[in-house]
Structure formats: C-alpha cells, structure tokens
Length: 196
Ligand code: GAR
Image (cartoon, protein in one colour):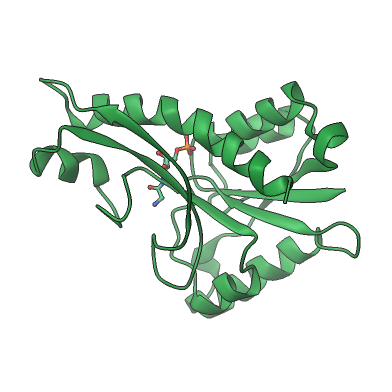
C-alpha cells in the first residue's frame, strides 16, 4: 500500500478533492494507495476537520515552535516518515501548504513530492498570483501541478489547467474559477504518479 501524506495550511479543498477522488475511484484497489495522513502547520486549518471526519489521521506541527526552517523541516520529515515503510512508500502532496521548504527536504522526497500552484508556471511564482495575473493584463490564468525541487515553484510540470480572465474579474473571482480546476487536475496528477 502506498501512503499518501497531504500537507495543508488552510481550507484544504484540494486535499478534500483528492480524498473524495480516491474514494470514488477506488484508489486502494486500483493503485494500492490510501490517504494515510493530513498534516497542517496550523492547528485551526479548516481542512483538518474534513480529514478527521473522514477517518484520516491528522497531525499539527506548528512552525512557530521551531527556531529555524531546517529544524521545522526535520521534524516534519520525521512525522511524514512514520508513514514511509518498506512496501509502503510515502507520496507527499502539498495542497495549500504555505511554507517554503528547505532544499534538503525537497531532496529527501525527490520524485515523490508534489505541489499545486495557482498560476501557469513558470509565470507568477510566489504569492498574490491572481492579482499579479490581473495586473499584467493576462487573458488567461490557471494552475500548475509540479514535482517539488529545491527552487521555489519550479520543478517538472505534471499538469496544468487554463481558465479565461473575464472582464470585471477580481483576484477573488479569478481565484475561485481557478480553484475549481485545481480540484480536477490535482487528483488526476496524483493518480498518474501512483501508476508509475
Ligand atoms: C490553492 O489555490 C493552492 O493552489 C494555493 O493555495 C490554495 C489552497 O487552497 N497554493 C499556493 O498558493 C501555494 N504556493 P485549499 O487549501 O482550499 O486547497
């Protein structure tokens, strides 16, 4: 059984989309995979409630309790690696996890660490992607699922979704249109990785 560990910081709608798709598409029978745990760096992340309600193990690791990024990432890796066992390899899925990870962390999980970013990478890495797309006069925007490497919001692209920017769009309306697409491409990209 492959263990999927999903990292969140907030609403967790992408996490929920993956959990729901895994159930609907019978990932355990098809791919020998299950969502084993959801970890948040914020105790009040709404997504934790969804995970608990679905019988998924949850953990909170507050980054503010650590003196350095390295110390936090080491503790995070220790938590994740509890689900990484012989015959039960772990796949780490960042789903709205709003922490910059150290190069060491990315290397530790190379090839099995994914992220979703709300822009058409390589455009608009970092924060405030929707407003920046509007400010740049983009006619299209979207989201990208990629493997995580040491460089922030880079790494091999696994899937992308494109949406139109509509007249009168605000960062919020554009974000909502993109998020709907995120919920389609992230489960699909994870399912493809599970088949490798
Ligand atoms: C999503 O739009 C995701 O692409 C973005 O945060 C949101 C999380 O929503 N991630 C990033 O900006 C990462 N740099 P969710 O918690 O409802 O899945």
